[in-house]
Length: 255
Image (cartoon, rainbow, N blue to C red; front, side):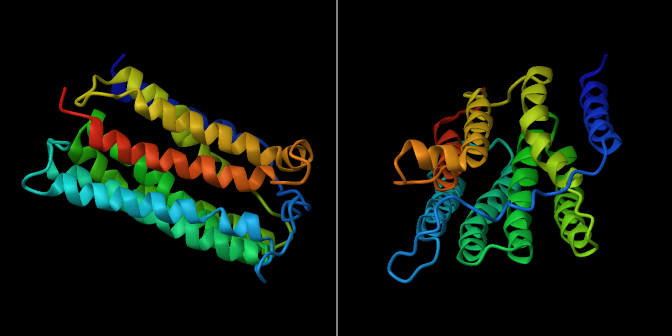
């Protein structure tokens, strides 16, 4: 079977599985994080301040793109158009830092929507960047706007559903599952055009660790004797995944 059909069929099957499931409501205690300490007048200070690595990682990635796009820079891109989704990805990572910090100052659904919107842009932009590298630049760039719009639509659908008293996380869960499940498939189906292709698996792995830390927020807080919650560590590990993307671009070469 042709790789294009396998990838498209897998994406369709994933979407069908998600939407055939009953609506998934966000837990009522979602905004009740373990670490509520105020430091230097900043509410929820560690959960808030731990978003700074996102800003640093995103800015570092944009700096790397500037270096790699220069005439004297190493040849990290066969086609200059491949920088577009990466630029959007790193810009979205910077936005995550600010949006998530704003959310954690006073956690509620309205602020969370902006945090998730920035995350959706990052997920979709990175996925498109890999599509452009593996499937083809033209195909990838054609999907950039539709996939980013779908990601934003998923977040704002969830936000709207919450205002109707029947919150539904299914579209948002799909946005997160796309890179987690389809990126490994993409790497397997298509030959690499660059070295260090397995770095993408490390990025997915780091995000999975970040999700586990989020789920284990209170357990981590208890294990560390109240020093730090799992959610603050989630921010650091997720930002490390974005930093890993930037380092990958610096180190890779055309295959």
